[in-house]
Length: 162
Image 1: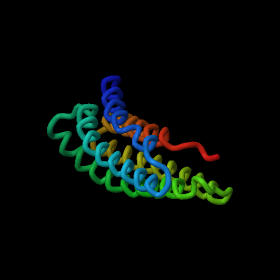
Image 2: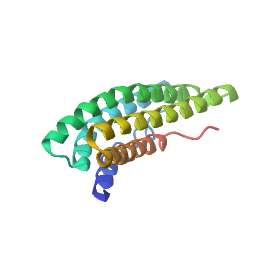
Image 3: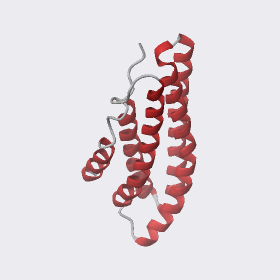
Image 4: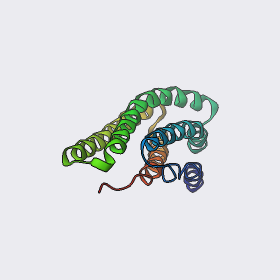
């Protein structure tokens, strides 16, 4: 698992710094959008190979796992899209943040966290039914680790609300 975490962290850390180096103003929003899109693309490409290694499944198990995982990923995409929209709203309102807007952003972020947890719980059950509890727990551990690393990488680039 340490090897898995190190590999996941390394691939995500190489994507850092884009927002911190972005010019201010209108191009900042474009840079943020480009960064989020690049992160999604890079993470998707790396995530499959990292998960494949972490899961350590035989060919028959891999086919079953990836069939379920593809459905999970489709549902997860909507959650990440909402998160990206919330980050965009944050960037658009950063210099003129009001209490009401800050509250909307915070509430949306908490709702997003709840949706992500509910999705992981749902698919833990799906994987458990199809592949057993140990495989489902390994999925949950690997997926949670990757999502936490991705979140940390993204959130570390955002300045605190002033």
